[in-house]
Image 1 (tube, rainbow, N blue to C red):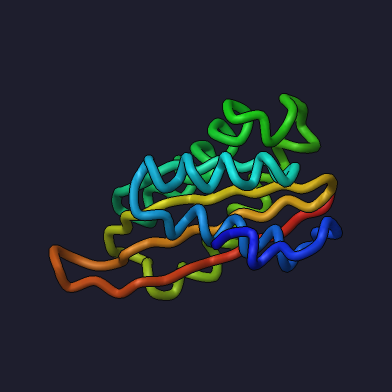
Image 2: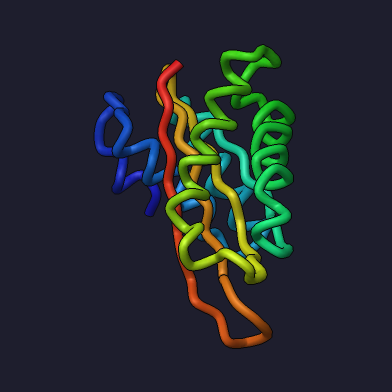
Length: 144
């Protein structure tokens, strides 16, 4: 199913964005690990991490989680250029959902995908209070 999106070996920003979104939308840790294994076989490095909390006070924590999980999973090296690329792409993704999320709680997943110089971060969050949620997805891309 994942391989249908990636019909050739020339992956660009569109395909890497699709991988990050797919990880962010994964239902559970088992499905997430299956996607990561498939992508790894294609040379695409990935990471994903859950997050929940009040949006306004959590922006820095969300960015930090994206960077830490990317280093832990080997998506990026521990240097300021690659860490900055993840931080910047995550911030870009968050700015896309900010109008809906300000002052409310968010919960969901951050997906990160990298192929060679392309790095994409996708955030998929339920936004709101209790069961009265809106859903939103944000996407950021960087080249290193």
